[in-house]
Length: 287
Image (cartoon, rainbow, N blue to C red):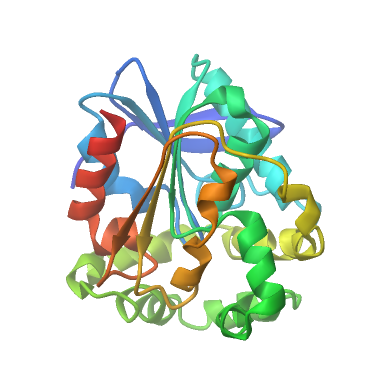
């Protein structure tokens, strides 16, 4: 196992843990989703560190980062402010922002609301917010796929359900969903179990769903904003949570070059399930 460089920063009132590798002139900041932590980017960190400064934080509420009390502490704007402050803390004026799942939602928020900070934008299996909201409201198939978002609105019960057997939860969530199951070995899944045994980590992660469910009622706020940075979308087409129809229309929200790279036999966990192809596409886009 590679020795990673672990650091901490106090930003926006929260202590963030992050892994930092490389010393390139451009910063690549990689934002993980749920139920993940910085480690989900291990393959990409290794691929990019020779040419870039690569930083993969644990988002607030996850693993070794701070876990503020209260659902309101986990809105997209609050989490985005963490990352904006972290970029400044690291001494950079801009960053290549990469996000997946909830990290993708935060990355979209930064790209749309802090355009001067974004050198390039990469999003993996996470749609533009307006497209997602529209599909939740009008697409029965996507509404059914998103059932867990509504289950997570319940207090305590989701945490209790996960905590009954964390290892089994990650086997079902990661390995059973994936095409390349060897990429989620027992040793790797134990890393996730350890991360979610941290005090408050179960609630911290689920609070993203609780804090942001109101966004479904706020579709109009996303309609007139566009990403001004060159944009790459990578999408595993075997995603059981997000349908490929969520890609459609994304180009309307990008005021720069835009490329979609689809991976046919690949799950939601695209950067792990098909990491070699993801790394190749990512390097081509960034260089």
